Image 1 (tube, helix red, strand yellow):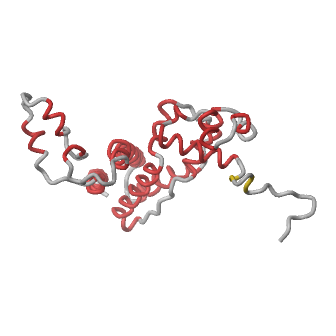
Image 2 (cartoon, one colour; image 1 turned 90 degrees about the horizontal axis):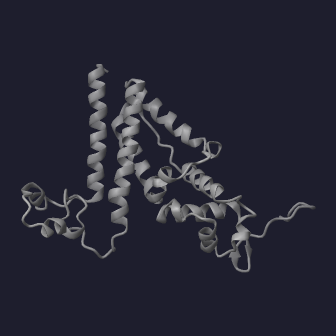
Image 3 (cartoon, one colour; image 1 turned 90 degrees about the vertical axis):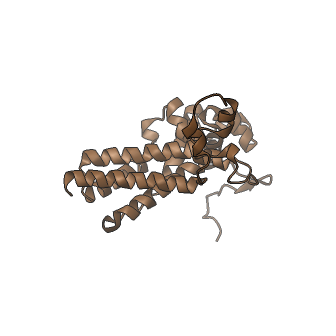
Length: 242
C-alpha cells in the first residue's frame, strides 16, 4: 500500500546503512554502557559506534545528558514484568529472580550507572514504578508486612545486582574453550588459588581446603542465592505467624 498523499516515509536505509533514528542512537548508547560503562557514553563514542558524525547525532539528541537519559529509559523499558502466583510463592520468587538476572546480565555495566550519573527524573520510564509495585503487592499478598516486603524486595535486587557483576559478568567474559573446572578461574572459591599460591607461608587452611570442594557453576551458585531469599521470606512469615 502506498503512503497517503501528502506524506513521506523516512527510508529505512540510506547508502546501504539503516537510517539514523533516536531509537538507534539509544540502542548504541545502551550497547556501549552495557559493555564499557557510562563513562564511555559520549557523543563522539556513540557517533563512532554508528559510523556517523557527531553533528548528525545532534539531530536526534540534545547532548550527553540526553544520551544518559535515553540509555536508562531503554534499559528500564526492557525490564521484564514477572508473573506472580500467591499459591506458589516460592516458584514465583525463583522466576522473579531469574527474570532480574537475565535482564541485568544483558547489559551488566549499565547497573553501575547510578554511581556516576544522574538520570533526569522525568525521563525515568514509568515501568520502573510499576515493577516495584508488582513485587510489593506480591510480597504483602503472601503475608509479609509492607516493611518486610520492602526489605525483601531491596535485598533481592541487591543480591542479584552483585551476583551479575561479580559472577556472571566475569563468567561471560571467559574464553569459551576454558574448562569449567579450571581452578585458576573458579568463581566459587573464597580466595583464588593463584593468590594462595603467591603466599604459601600464610596460614589459611580453610581457604585452601575449599578448593578441594566440588566446583559450583554460576547457575548452581545463583540457585543458592535464590534459596537464601526464600529462606529469608519464610523466616519473616514464621515470625509474623502468617
